[in-house]
Image (tube, rainbow, N blue to C red; front, side, top):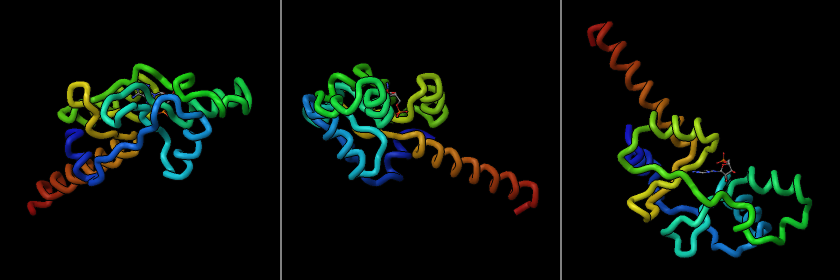
Length: 144
Ligand code: AMP
C-alpha cells in the first residue's frame, strides 16, 4: 500500500501545525487539546520548518525545568524533519521511522507538505493489508 491510500483513508488531509516563535507552552496545549503526539512547525501551513513532538517537550522539561515552557518552539524542535512521498510504500515508511526512531512523517510533494502519517496510521494500513492477504490465501486453499 502507498502513503497516498493512507491519506485517503484518513479522510482529513489537514495537518496540525504551529507557527515558529510560538511558545513550548502553546505546543503542550495544542498537543493536549488535539490528542496528538506531534506538530509540524510551519510559517504558512505548507512549508516544513521543523517538527516538535511530545518527546521533545518532555525531554527539555526534564533537562531545563518548567522555564522551558516560555521558550520558542524553534529551540526544541527537530529542524530537519524527514518526509516521505505519497508514492512511498508502508514498508518504506516503517523502515525510515524505525531507523530514525521517530513516529511521525510529513508527506511531501516537492517542498510542499500535503499530509502527515503517524506510526499508528502505518501499522493500521499494514494490518489491513495482512488481513486481505490472509483472506486471499485462505480463499485459494479452501477453493473459494
Ligand atoms: P516522535 O517519535 O515522532 O515523537 O519523535 C521522536 C523524536 O524525533 C523527536 O525529537 C522529534 O522531534 C523527532 N522527529 C519526529 N518526527 C521526525 C521526522 N519525520 N524527521 C526527523 N525527526 C523527527
